[in-house]
Amino acid sequence: MTNARLDVGLRRHGIRLGTLLVLGLGLLAVGCSAPETSPEHTRIGYVHGTVDVSAEDARRLTHINYAFANVTEEGCVVLEQERDSLNLARLRDLKSANPDLKIVLSIGGWAWSDYFSDAASTDSSRARFARTAVDLLAKHDLDGLDLDWEYPGQPGQDNVYRPEDKENFTRLLRTVRRHLEKQGRADGRTGDERYLLTIAAGADAEYLAHTNMAAAHTPLDYVNLMTYDFHGGWSDHTGHLANLYPPAAPDTLQRSAATAVNMFVKAGVPPQKLVLGVPFYGRGWSGAGARDDGLYQRYDTSRGSYSYDTLANHVATQPGFERQWDAVARASTLWAPDSSVLITHETPRSLRAKAHYVQSRGLGGVMYWEHSADDGTLLRTLHEHLP
Image (tube, rainbow, N blue to C red):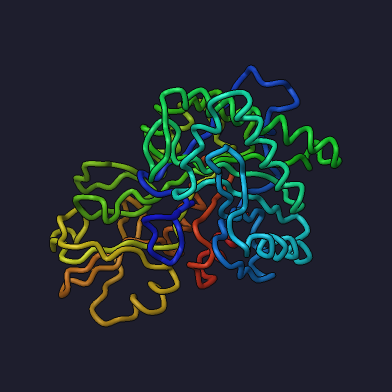
């Protein structure tokens, strides 16, 4: 996921306190429950803006999530950009390179979650949302839907939210699953070929407090955890963007990808449904304190976001920058002591650690935001180390 705070020319698919969700509900009909296993780990790439995905990249991915469709004030799911139809056609064409590639439409995101709460509020509004979303899926010959509601029961950018979101979120997911099952029967998409339903979830305790994960995961195939944006320009001190484990340094937040996974499993989400989110971008600060190579220090100004391509090929090669590795948190930084600039970002080394973690914990796989920010290095790393 992410759309507003991500100044890489993209919108953020999962900002804020990076989080993840997924729930399970025993009230669902048997035909609506998601399979608990998959033949391989998923490698899901979010694609935003103009589609520029090579055939080679398509062969390295299992899923592409196209971002985003909007939710209107009337609760309908619509494509807002003229380029959307062409982009979706280009993504479908990639199946010639990888016939098993799944193309999924992601709905909402940071900027377009305004009316999710209204759409989820009644039986009729949930049916309208589901019907219009599934109509788009059928029209564009897609393989599934991904709901990126930021956030149920709490503020995001300008979204409506209410206490009832906690249970209405589960009701909305169940309604969408029923409509997908109906469309699947008409299209011969059943069993292992059924249409997919996933969500992007905030990776923090607040997200879990405002959702009923133990119920909501049942109609879902995967929960894409937004395990990134742990620190950024909104933080009062520097810190890792997407560390795998909690740091040894005294960080007041103590957030990590592993902590989020543990919380979601404890909340009732099966590990094999959890997909670990990784950022293909970095965040930086100027005027960071020199202690601990700039980590967990006060700073003067935020430097915003950088694509991985920019960091690897333009920033890291500049004189004065030192590559740092936090062996406890399993996270990479760039530190320029003379100019007091700190940049936190994903690297092949940190991705290898996360790929090992995903396999050791039996998670569903990895997703990333966003495809155009890579120079190919990070996706190759995932493909090589997460079979």
